[in-house]
Image 1 (cartoon, rainbow, N blue to C red):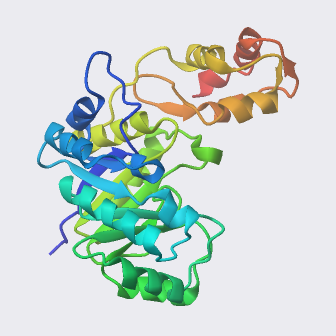
Image 2 (cartoon, rainbow, N blue to C red; image 1 turned 180 degrees about the horizontal axis):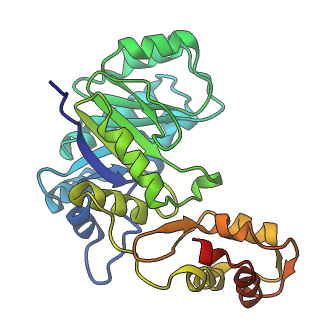
Length: 311
């Protein structure tokens, strides 16, 4: 008997930039997505009354996860002092209001995580009925890794677009940043389909997928659409060269070399037609290496390649 695929929850790191003029961002967000990671708690203390309103605005099936405050991870470096305990107790209260059972903890790159540090921290903070979704940005020692595997309340976080999971017994938690620098990346439909295939084949009961790139709402929206309808939404014009020109006019500064244009624009995805898309960088790579004065000169050089007749 084939195992059942996991429940799939798709969302992003926050809803504050999900702008629909004249409408509440969270209400509109929760009409499309079934999950959100609350990142605001990393930067500041959110009043519990505000968290109550968040919960009231969203459907019962909508899931929140809550990020650990900066003071715990980046300031105190997981030292379980009074500040850390107080901050964690606040997060538990907020999570309870949101009916969330997952606390996200991201450690800074400079922090080495070994078994003693992790065990000391966990013994003091008292997770109770919560899971700790742990993303280690720095070095993780072998003894800490083995310790994590034995602790069912710890969910190892990974980026499903470029990493393999350290498997949890019941839950996968993936924070997706993409392959670019500083979260600057957009996914093609082919890449999103690969992510979805990996997610549906995960040997767990539930997987939470949180996008964090600069086009996170677009990427998460496409994946959510695919999950619901088993096809991607149709691309809207402009297509091909016109789509590239539109992106170059948006924020590319000229004059610029080919490599400068690729670095600035190559991560973006443009539609070739109603069905297919491609990273701009895969097309711009065909440009001759020279300085370009404006977008029209770029488009004219691309026309000479006859590349779009081949695509």
